[in-house]
Image 1 (cartoon, helix red, strand yellow):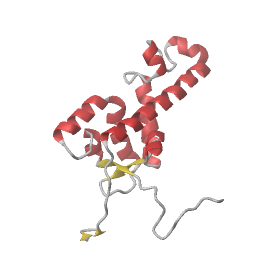
Image 2 (image 1 turned 30 degrees about the vertical axis):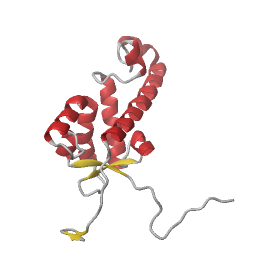
Image 3 (image 1 turned 180 degrees about the vertical axis):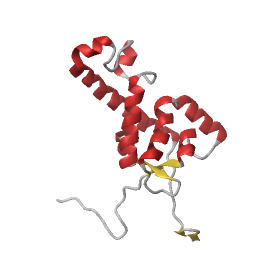
Length: 164
């Protein structure tokens, strides 16, 4: 069936659970890397400039009310703006695209990432209430992006085999 822009395209919207899994992978990986950088920061960490200061939970995970949120914002903006995928999304076969399923640019990634890094509970809640069934958070809607399942299958007419 042909649409206004040519051939109709089927896009699979990612589930909330799969997106949550990708988010968890991202915050754990970024938290670990940021914590390792704290060791390199040495004495600066004692003066409040280093990452991951605070209670035990915040030591091992990201404190979204601090500089950690800024690090996550930059991480998601760059990876999703240039590649469409963070490490968590790569691991779970997801990608951020525009509403037509095409690549997004850095400004759209920044808008989309802002809600995820700084306002996630509110961002999700508004998305669930105001846009039920869309699979979008508020900042997905503002950035005109969606999170889709990436079809990693071989292209049509190709079959991959393992060597014996």
